[in-house]
Image (tube, rainbow, N blue to C red; front, side, top):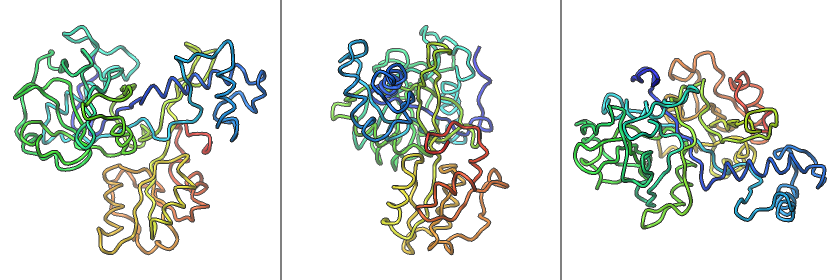
Length: 387
């Protein structure tokens, strides 16, 4: 059965998790190899994430390539978590394009409750899960959503499989920046399930495609996908949507990556885990100080720099905007910038009663995030540096 019909109140945000170049399976194979051969090769742990410098940088790879049981040139491995995450969070503009939003949110939500997604008229599950991105043109768009054929020639809406009309306000909206979410189509009133994100302003799409949302967070993932594009539009490596759903602040993590941990007692011998990387806004006096925070936090968080600059938007306004858009989870303020924020902030009521702003030097930032912010009370699976 399909999930309950999404609405503007229940599905303001959605998330899509992208696997780039089969990174998830490569990391899972490395983890399984280490778990099975740690005593054979003298690894310091049977857990991939607990291995140290030389083990991660080359020993695991070298041991894998020489192992008669495991070595397979068609199944390469990677030994580090993704530099970027998997997850993109989008905000849907229901007042602008309710049909497009309902269609997209339903295709994200179907199958997220542990039950199979309903089957469409095409005979394929009505969900974006396990569908591929078929078109990536740098400085233009990345397009997916064809879960019927996977090549851009198909697609199916949730409205009995029928194509649905262009919505006037969505057509009037502009593709005027990076991260716009818009409907893919083959002409007027031919919307189905295909969608695209813009890499830049695309005025050539204005009036032809329905704008119905924009990216809130996951810019690192969008950047990585753009780097996998080509002038022909063919991705240079596979890009797959491995999970999707409705995103709810405080309930569903906003950033991170999937890790299949070896577990012989579980189904298929693995325990799929979403490893959370909190989204952190860093208020700093300069780019040089931001770099110090990056060195301290980059391994376990996704950073959004807010560099104090009197010539640009005020720091106060910028931080409030990030919190009200749910683009970040917490804010770290460098001591020299403590006067830039007047607390309490005038933000969404969701943040009431949550410690969301902390002051810290780069060297102390990780400890403050772990011990002082509202994240410490979450049951999310944080990565090894946090737990």
